[in-house]
Length: 159
Image 1 (spheres, rainbow, N blue to C red):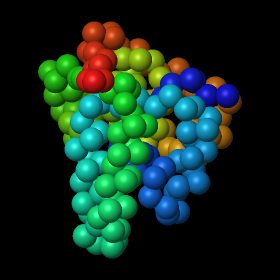
Image 2 (cartoon, rainbow, N blue to C red):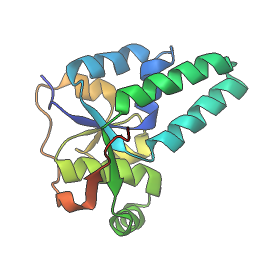
Image 3 (cartoon, rainbow, N blue to C red):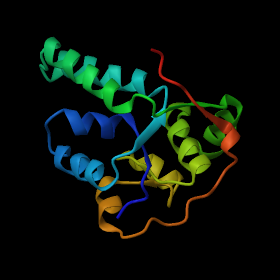
């Protein structure tokens, strides 16, 4: 069984909703660990994925709107805010984007895996950033580097 909670990046969320070659894996990850969390900036990346799919993969706009709503519902109450200075330092240290670093820092702070298909991120943070197939293939996750929880705070849903 999984860790009970995992960090997922925007691409994993997109694979879950947009039918494609990795949809089955994303759904298996969700089945194994249904509590997905992400930095609040996942929305920006996910929105860009929707726009790209509308423009280049011919995803109908109405379908993109439904997927957007479903993704917001899935992630409601599971978003965290980063301490940007820590993101800056870690991103520069590992030579990865600040966006990608937010996912990994959240995973490190919570002591849980970051499930991502981003190869450079997996290479920069082995043991924390893991591909979906590897996550599904292990009984227990490798020890993640634990950071102080103060780097992230839960964003409460408005409403």
